[in-house]
Length: 342
Picture 1 (cartoon, helix red, strand yellow):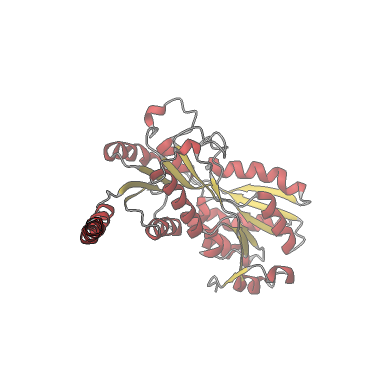
Picture 2 (cartoon, one colour):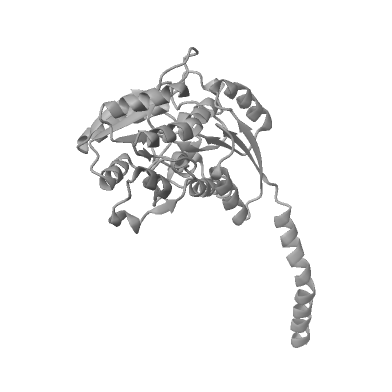
């Protein structure tokens, strides 16, 4: 009798088990997607490709709304209102301007103008602590976390010195950008400490008080006349728009350029750069999003993520044009590219 009862239980379980699987799968497939609201600075980049790919590869359901400030922070207030109306699960911001425009600084006197009650992550912010977006890299102090993308400045300077014993480094920069001004102040200390002379040169302003690309040729020639033998492009969105013009002028004048970010070296004609790969930055941001959305970690308890490895990128066609080839000890560790310089 006990055997028959035991067999009855087994038979019942076997009959029921095919019904259990579809029920579980159905529950998983019907999970509501997370709503992500992205505010970009100048349109989509490889960062967003990496971000989406991470979420897709880890089966995290989501809908992503994309908006762009179109290089103008005055567009931020209307997007703040749109975000408040949409009530997304996560806000994603690209760049210092977008991040400050949407979530504000941590010590803002007018917090009501910004998104403060929705979790947020940022990417491509050069100096999140100095820009007062976070209190520290370990604990942000607010509902915001993100990804650190710049390579350490001392590592950048070491690469420049290793390529050639340059003597005088100039940074031609957009003086209207607070982000860039931070970079210049750091260079003023780091470059002389490495045994080079530093020459900061602001881009000329047009009649509207904006940096004028028409001044670049004159400025590069002036830098050459001062004995500058290498140019530095920092995290400066001006050169994301005018990098081709700037780099071509520099090559014509026989001066190499080093880039601290991906765009001038991968999408333009800088000679070399020590960079964080944008796609990989995006995947790391996806991991941060997973911790917030899936694991339920509050952003203030989530340290800023940092890449462990960076890329030494060299454009061989530019090296050929300048007759300035990398030393042999760089050949085995560098990524080489043809930038299409003609």
